[in-house]
Length: 319
Image (cartoon, rainbow, N blue to C red; front, side):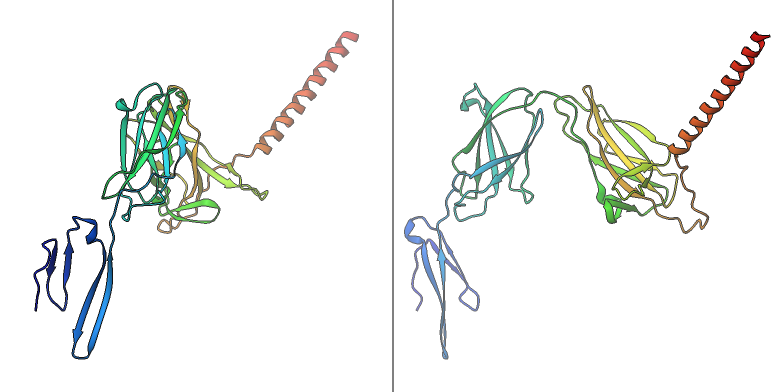
C-alpha cells in the first residue's frame, strides 16, 4: 500500500503520468531517484539524479572590443563552473582609480546571444578600475577579471552604421539591388559621439560606374547630391534617385563640434522600370580625359596667336 512520505516530497498523479516535487532542505535530498513501473509482464525503471546548484565561479576574462571617449564594449569568457544552471546575467562594478569600492557603480546586463555588452556615460581622459561577475538563478559569482582602463579624449564621432538589410537582394561585389527605380528610404544607427554631441549627419550620393581596369574601384559619373540632416533623433532620409538601372554610391558621416566621422558607404543599383518601358536615361559621364585634351588644345591655340602677334610686331618695328 501507499506509505506516508516526507513532507518535502510531493507526488502528483499515480500513473500513467506522475510528478515528484522535492524541496531539498538538506544535502541528503540530493542524489539518484528511481522511477519504477510494473505490470503483469514485468518491471521497468529509470534513474534520475537531483543535483545541487550553486553560484557560478568567476568569469575567466572580460575582453574589450571597442573603446570611445565615453563607452566601453565588452564580451565575456564564461566561467569554468556555471553552478549547474545557465548564466542569466553579467555585471561590472567600476570606479575612478582613486576611489574606493564602497562608492563604485554597478551595471548588470541580461545574458545576450550576440555576447556584446556596452558600458556608457563614462568620462573622457579618466582612469577607471573595473571588476566583473556573472549570475545564475542561485546568485552572483565572486568579482574577478579586474582591469584598469584610461578613457581617450573627446573626438569626432564614430561612423554611423547603415541598415543595409532594408535595401533588397545583395548581389556580387557587395552591391545591393533596390526594389525601386527612383527612390529609397535610407536608415542608419546613431553612433557613439565620443564625448561631444552629434549635431548633424552629412548624406551624399551620386551615380558611379565600375572601373574597367579590373580593380574594385568605382568612378563617379554624375552630380553629387548633398544633404545636411539635423540630428534631433533623425535616423532616416529619403533618397531621390534620378536614374533607373544605375549604380549609386551612398556616403554618410556623423558630425560634432570636433569634425566629421569617417565615411560609411555602400553601392546600390536601382531597378529597371519596366512599366515606363522607355529608354533608360543614363547619367552624364564625367570624362576627365576629354577635359584635359580640350585644355591642351586651347593652350596650343593661345600659343599660336601669341607667336603671330609677336611676329607682326617685329615686322612693324623693322619698318
